[in-house]
Length: 327
Length: 129
Image 1 (cartoon, one colour):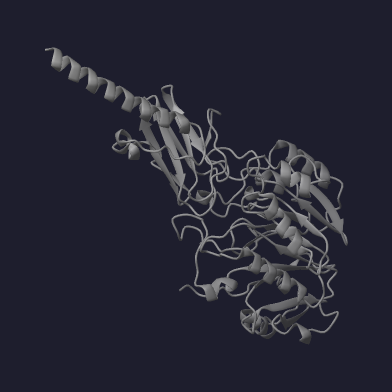
Image 2 (cartoon, chains in turn orange, yellow; image 1 turned 90 degrees about the vertical axis):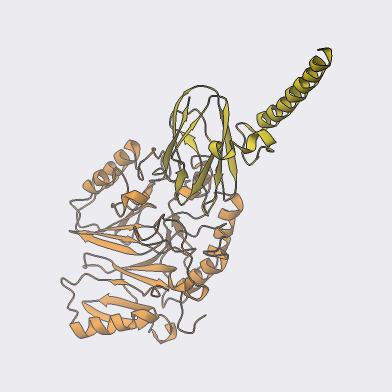
């Protein structure tokens, strides 16, 4: 069977003073679930398998939050017959972090079939997370049959149009975008004119030193067009962010981690908490991928994001649901 | 002579009632979801020619050619939901989970492109002659 998924860690090496030994030590921890934090230019690593060993305050970046994605509540096929258990495992992982994240971002496909009980289940489970605020954007599975009307009623009360919105936390500007509505035959994800106009206006008056985090379901960069893994008009959106020194784009949809750095923009996609999907082109289609039962938690996971003032990119740490004691 | 006519008449009425029975069953299922037409014997030979299989994020056959008046049935064999949406807004199915079906009866000749609006890269067409 394919290699168990290892944790991946993304760093900005440019001005952080990490020496090779520190970096390698960090990577060696990666298999067990490591947290590597940049503080004042010094890299420290901690094992997530033994969270009690992490000193309080070790994670004091300016802001930390967790991205989860693709919970697909209601899915019950062989690739994962119990998506409730794996979402709970993800929440347990969040709760075991040394410091509670400020909030959660859910990058969509909350439900599998847009059924009310599926949304209710996710809401109920998230109540036990250490972070009480959760910000959502919809996936294509959340807007079935009603063009997103139910999604908006549940999660889009403060949002505009199809559910887009922005907010600020600790000096970081967050933009939630919707690219799963009004999809055209043969096309990719779509943002649309109204949303783009809103976004241009939303960032117009921000100073270019404001760190920006954009989150949306379908990747805002072209990962693999044959499988619909991209957004038709994302170039226009990214154009509005060209002048900013730090832009982080967080997406879901593809059920695997992938990252790309382009200038000041870091793109990152998260694992699902429900089921994995194949690497681009490695299977006939992008559907749920079955792995041996004891490997499942190695390919599902959460993403911990830390922003430290003065550093221009955010530290993004993916960790799987696998725990050191095999639980 | 008379005997032959009588037998012919009997056979004719049998054929007519059989056809009416088959048509009645077909009519019940046109344009409906999750409702497989109870196949009369006459349907079996042409069953595969009026079916579209949805699997691996694709419609098979990608182009289906049928005669006007045919009911086409889509069945989702994939393990994620899909739907069937005509690009010219002629027909639109509900969301189909695994094993669910959608049927539509094409009465007018033409080419009907459609796609899955959940996974829009999935495109196909029905050509009605």
